[in-house]
Image 1 (cartoon, rainbow, N blue to C red):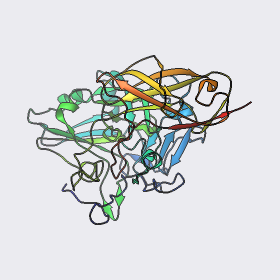
Image 2 (cartoon, rainbow, N blue to C red):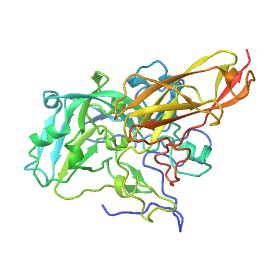
Image 3 (tube, rainbow, N blue to C red):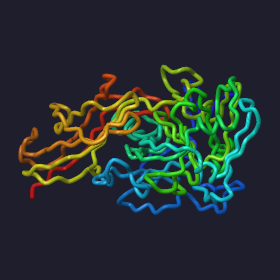
Length: 413
């Protein structure tokens, strides 16, 4: 599909918000788009928005999206349970019957079209992998609140991310059984959620191409999440899981896969999920693929209250698109001094690392005094990447990876 510039102003155009998100970063309140309606022959019903409950103590609702509160991560272990896992929907969660679902493979990169049913997939050799799914807009709100730069899109803090244990069939296995031709260059999975419509333009269902080399490497067609069948909001009956790539690539509710002997494109690579802004090409940078950057988050409420005069064991998690986390430092005084945190548990390259550190507010810059403090965590990975203090601006607020200034209040009790 040829590139179509989204509507905007002249000179440096302001791009439309990412599909399914809203242009609310410059406003107050959580806001969001109205829920869409699911369509398709395999969708039995069309519930508005998200299916699972969204208790306020676990989630911040953003229209058809739901952000995990980081305090809800405390004590849940390495894998995020389904009831706390963030949701990123472009329109609305469809309800699909696995008994009638089919995966259709077609295109010039195959000897002939091929179809698989749910039970057929379950009968194929399976793999289990711990993989992170992260929205490319995770951390977007900090462009405004920390760097004072306007961006468009849903104002995620850091809760648009989660790690789960996924089980499914390698995409390579399915492609080979479907008769993959040597000349295939791209595959393009497409979801069964409703078509995305913006400014009167029907962009069709969510889809984006993946190079054949990646498709044959570590991509899986997952049907389980943390040992249970996929829930509706997370792709039931089958979704893609693409390790190391932005969340968009892990298409939910996958219904068909085009396999092509020539390069493929979609609006999700020509118009959306590209870097626009000063110093970037007028048509936007290359389509986003890998999860770039390195990030850290505290398992604490935003603006948490902590009692003065006693130690607190602070917990957090760090992750990187460049490799395993090798170290985390924490500052209790807005970056004036830094202290090494203790890493623990798994250090999976496609997931995150947990850490903890003890802090007694009496040892801070204002010993024994109540009032506001700023906590900061910065990580380093095995490639030598250190979390930066600032992220280069882009108009749609993608890939924010700067050290986040987490406010807390020390309370005399």
